[in-house]
Amino acid sequence: MTFTQIHKEYDWNEVKNFIHSRTAADVAAVMNKDTLTETDFAVLLSPAAEAFLEPMAREASRITLQRFGKTIKIYAPIYTSNECTNSCVYCGFNKHNEIPRVTLTDEEILADAKTIADMGIQHLLLVTGESPKVVSVSDLARTCDMLRDMFSSLSIEVFPMSTEEYAALRSSGADGLTIYQETYNRETYARVHPAGKKRDFDWRLETPDRGADAGYRTVGIGALMGLEDFRTEEFFVGIHARYLMKQYWKTHVTVSFPRIRFAAGNFTPYEIIKDKNLVQSMLALRLFLHDAGLVISTREPAEMREHLLPLGVTQMSAGSKTEPGGYNKEHEGKQFKVEDDRTVDEFCSMLRSKGYDPVMKDWDKNFLVRS
Ligand code: SF4
Image 1 (cartoon, rainbow, N blue to C red):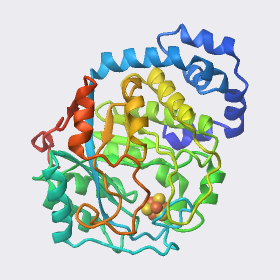
Image 2 (cartoon, rainbow, N blue to C red; image 1 turned 45 degrees about the horizontal axis):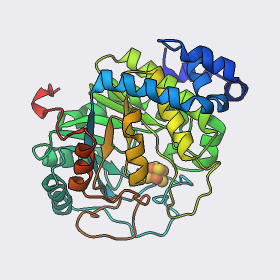
Image 3 (cartoon, rainbow, N blue to C red; image 1 turned 135 degrees about the vertical axis):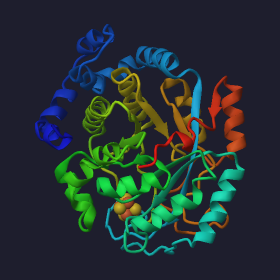
């Protein structure tokens, strides 16, 4: 059964009403369990569970320590183009926004990549807007071929592709895929994606399957927090992650918690995601899925990232720039504003001072079986 079929079995409003009507007694009953059902997970996302954040944090911390130790995998994104044919109303790269449009040449990509590698980064996330005519699958393959020897791991966060196209990029050295559904509410999805290829909800929903089918060793999913009721949204993220973990046992599944940040276009979110909302989402996810990787990027301020450290996070970006060419020259074409602007060295020193090991390399391309 595909996740599209599973998703269709749920009524958004029923899930939302269930979550919002839980009581403290419901939450207390879940807190005594070792293994959580999806109903238990929904209970932990409820407003009633906000009174239980401290015991939830203790348990999330215990599980994370047991499964991952005190380690944080470090990565950085490289944006190679901010051209986009889509009109996502919340995104600075939306084709209607008047920002400087930049697509890097191979030489410029290499220059940014070298700067990133010189910072000690070994896990690279290759990001573009969605404009296959400007940056095609073969362009991406060429970029991966060019960068594969500079980094131990290459992940991609680009337009959704077919399994065959993902396999082609895998042959060029890509081993990880990140793809956010943005929102799991079909109506909201249609509203915030008014035009462009991204309007196809089901094609996007099944993208992680195609990546896992193509043999990617990591697949990252998430919802853009602020487009919908975050509690219901995170419920769908959780059951999607669980589906992927069961379906593709060879693939490590990660979940991100991106909150909408200021971007060109001045989009007003459905709701402001408070720090405690983010914390609750992460804790509930960790208690539900003990082995999922949990990712926090530089969208979050330094203080918040440090606060989240013991609560279940396993991966963080550092030293990030969110505009093409930004590692060598700042300009106005950012996707969103970075909040934690510490250098990689500063960030890793902070981690060590708190007893954490920054993991600069957890994979070697020689492990990748070329297809
Ligand atoms: S979210 Fe992605 S697809 Fe949508 S406008 Fe931004 S870059 Fe383009």
